[in-house]
Image 1 (tube, rainbow, N blue to C red):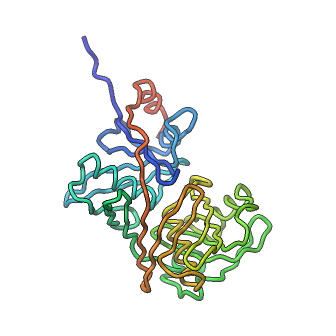
Image 2 (image 1 turned 30 degrees about the vertical axis):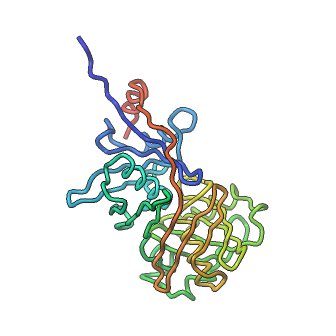
Length: 293
């Protein structure tokens, strides 16, 4: 008598070294709880990734995206993840057009596959200040959002708060190499001024339309690239007058091109690459099902 074995098909992708597992909701034979997410993202006992992109079709057309961080928390939006998902959907023929609509916890995002294989994403409108920082309600003025000070890890730091669908603390620095990210990153991410925690970007202006950046991602740690972080850094640099749009953002994993218009509408262009496709083993699926959730 044959047994029907459970399967979980997935695809592994990266955007400038920021790697994600892409899986359709119908291909997950269990509820994706925080405990199971942590186990799947583990780089030694699981697949290993900076997060999971869980997607499904929208009834009215387009797609839904749910982002799960490797610490079990949820993310509102991922710029790199959006480029990966868009290219995945198009290459696998789930999306028939090069332009598509993807609903996220941060709103509807519209990525487009370009002829050269790059993905250009309309990320929506950035906000300076807002409810993501304690002491601000609604949309704060630019002068209020810039030059805010906080004390973290024994240091007094000046930052710009930028909301691009998720919260970002952008700090300008003159030396990216000497940064003690393992000390500063967690202290800033979890600072009491950020009620929903924050992604942290340290940026250095390197030209009239260029910045270099290191990022500490909320719920992940330091990564080789962060799409929303690059957008936040470009917005902060443009509004301070340090650079002009479009801005080339240099990250450890490569470059992104960020366009910021006068109304703070933001466009991001960059690559996404498939690494491999796989199927979870029966044993691993059973271990995941045994986890509490």
